[in-house]
Image (cartoon, rainbow, N blue to C red; front, side):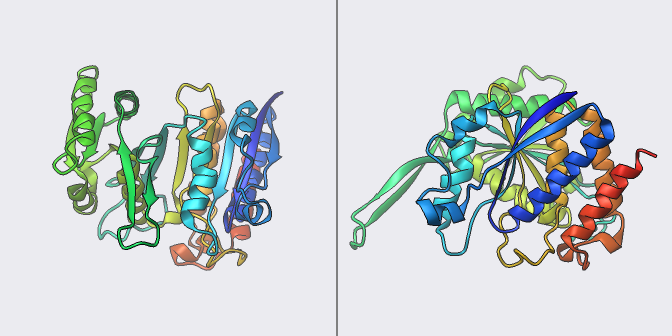
Length: 358
């Protein structure tokens, strides 16, 4: 029997609740298959550790993760700890050292869930957003000087390298090529950002020559928000910079019905370090501990994890279970307009997985 080593990093807030649900689903699938199992190591990294020890994770924590096959992550952030400390202290402190440069966020309207867009169905909104995940606006370059003085200065530098741009654009073209519509939209802001984003555009044109079977277009990021709302069916695969895709993917999640169902894969396509899978909803401290967090985003992230490690059949079974659960209005959590609990949704999903053995 094959054993997969999984690092579990629940983090903060509802991350603890949904990662527990996700691991229960993974173990249920493994038990059903009988051909693989999970060896899970739990890490207490997060804001509680920061308050105790002054750091969200050990300085060499990312190196400890290299031995794993995949990472399941919950969320990071707490109301009493500045957001820039939590994001850079944990999530980005994993993504960047492990070179998880491709952030992949599928978006579609699941059965039983309604989009806030009138008349839009699952046939109209089925996207994958590819986010550059290693540089751009979140490169970490910059600083502050003259603190507290009238002339105080703060800078954040967006960094675009040819190698960074080319590898994410190529990844996006390959993904678009693998999807039925073979359609890619490249998001830019080169009219205003006249250096880095012009490089982005130029490299996109160069890479496009290698994919003659992919139809592609270019869209300014501000116009892209309008197109996502007004013409969702015109889109399929989307690639954007770190900041732009960060914003657009949250809009996409809302248009699909709830940010609570949205998954993420932080991929290192070279596979020389593990990739990390997480829901995009954040720590949501306003509902933490109430037992009402939507675990679907974590289930979907777990399905992406399964596909990544080569268990495609189990991934398909999990997606089928997810769609069965979302199709049942009685299993909708408050973010979807229902009153189901995290436990109720998780139990129903596991029951469906176990019932598949019959």
